[in-house]
Length: 168
Image (cartoon, rainbow, N blue to C red; front, top):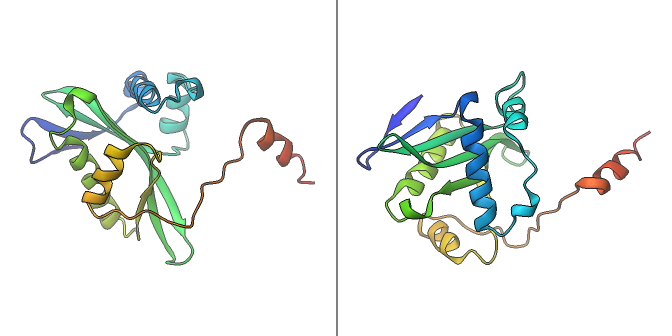
């Protein structure tokens, strides 16, 4: 799939297994920006297996300007028991710094919203770091609302492994 957009020379396409090194480079750039580089343990091989293997756990789009990859999004379906419908959770959206402010990121996010509508999803959700004011302002400008009163919880690493052993 390759979609033309209203920004001249900007297209959005579905990623393929051949894009795993590119996807990993975008993940690393995003992690650098978010000051979380130390948390990246993904490899091109793990991405190939989890994104394009027998069971694909997420979908990826690549934004291209004049044929050059300038950003990506990674998302997957979640489910709302309250609405009884699926949703899309946007794990990552990233545009190279030199391409920001040209409307590419907005179109990438609008494309995901379009997919959500086409797939009868009730919502699109994502997280943003509380210090990332430029992104927060952008999200407010498109009508996104913070989920006050909700706090993300995470169980990973040895805590995940240890807790899993409690199931007998």
